[in-house]
Length: 566
Image (tube, rainbow, N blue to C red; front, side, top):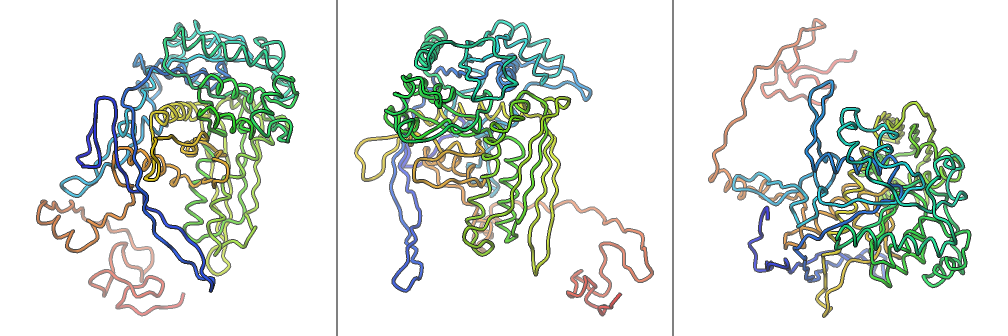
């Protein structure tokens, strides 16, 4: 282990980490006069974490696509520690862009008062991506080596090293229902299952069992990274309950989507299912089925580039008291995802997932927004084959500021789509598996339980997070990340990160630090004096007549000098 917690509330055995945790929150109500009454609450929770890391398999729906071939090649490249020449020198394999593998979290303060950081993956005993076995399905029969070449994501020198390993990997036949994806995908569909939807679901279940047996795995997680589907109908009698959905599959109902069939098959096999595309795969019947079988599901739509940035920027603007009034987002890309999204129904699925990302941020500030008021929000996606996987995203954020003023921020983002999405796929699978080994009970419960079947802790990685029925959606990126960190900290008996750092702000605490540490003054460099541009201007960094360099508040003029109108 990278660390251990020295606390009476934490116990370590060879099999488990056990912790007792005081969860503090506040409930808010109104009294008879309408005044808000805030009541602090504390609930005691007990956590147990299984320490043994299982043999994990990941099955990708759309294995032969850009994401599937990229993630498979990346795992092999990292496992073999491959490197390849580039214009700027030798590039080595890494997991940059992965929350679990390439980000850090604070453990606390060291003896000198500075924070001590460790990789997030060391907070709990997580699966290493190098050890994940990969398999999957695709409507294209191309092997993963040739699929990698078709994707044109990796540099040629890396492709040549990976090809002998990938050419041996063959996707299993997948479900193809032309009505759910764009017509332009028909030319790739040469590796498809036949029969009724019930027969195809049976075959998917057999594939999951076959992979688990042949690879000698403890667990399999199924993830959809295939084409975006159109939205399916949700209605009573079709998919409103688990029983209705299972019957609709038996009846070969046209409105049951391929992604929903994969979700049902995975749940019935006890495998978690994650939806990386924007369509409404997780219909009410799927969620109820997952609850009944106590199997995790998560979705929707990988949050990798433009939308992740949007959830940061709008959070910042609203949190700063600035009112976004118009958000216009334009994209063009040339990979197969872009080709499929050029069809109106499939684009509509993506438009919905991209547009909802600011809703909870807007709803949080009734000072800026009236009830029901939202910014104008427009999303455009165009297919431009030449740019391939190198997606261009352009955004314009217009906001109202102080005293009727306006502010416009324009952002241009060139992002290699699959290289941003692939580490997110790994994180989704690693975090889901980790959550499967966490048991929880409150002070009023006798038996340990688990997280809800809808695993909303994954929201940080998803554009349109699905949450348990009746619970709110949180899109603010920093809140989503803090959720993951603080829940995992609770599992090992650590308090949540709150950034108060009273040790650095309370006088007595600061004095104590100074007594126990040696303060080294920062190195000083003589200030460069800029050339004067006007007779009465002073050099940058000087303040004539003000020994401390302070100014008086009139246009930044020095204190000893009277303000003048120009």
